[in-house]
Image (cartoon, rainbow, N blue to C red):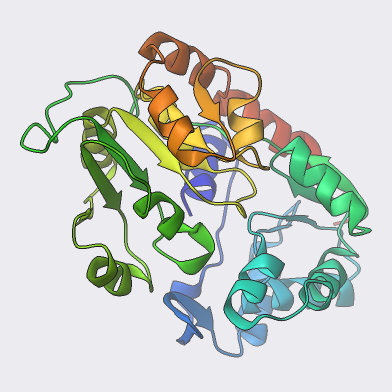
Length: 318
């Protein structure tokens, strides 16, 4: 996950000793309906060994997957405080795939986070939403964008396609609501950059759209810069870092007025938010790059790292 990888880089650069426990250290199986996500198999003993051997001053549990539940169990067993984060609208993803009422997965996720000393939440809108679902110990923790990588550059990436170019970047999965974008009657070219379980299906359904992937952040930034507008059709994201990356490259955002876009765009002039996504996409074409770049500059990683450290639960008993 880009946020956690960048956070680790900044923490290490500030002199903190960081250990990440991740699925690639365990035997895994593919997540049902999303095989690109690996799930650790019975990680309890391995997680316990690493935590005991590393003896951290603070423990942060980033996800509600098998590793998260194993770390949570160890912390509770050893009376260690810990923080958690709400990065993904897991209940909405379950509902989108199964039709299950939201209350059921929300109850499970709320139980996971209940013992946390602080549940780190990426935006005010998600903070309010979780309060309504009776989550406790919520703490604000914004996300940032690396403006040394994502910055204005030549708009040459899509010169061979009809303009304007409307770009989406991110996972290609049902919760991203991509048909809302791909069905729009827009001039020029629609491009989907990313991979995911719905990619092949959408390529067959929308042959007029272009589907591409990027290798590394430099190529990703090159593609952002080639676009005329960034269209973000998701209604279920907790934040939407890809919008910040587009803005940092000077590319305006078009999205629905929902949590995520509301927090990234806010009342700035860096994007167009509307329930009419086609109108928003067309309006975004008139937004100057300088407005986008200025908005992205407000999300510095130095501030994000300080906020993360301030929220940690430090164990001073060992």
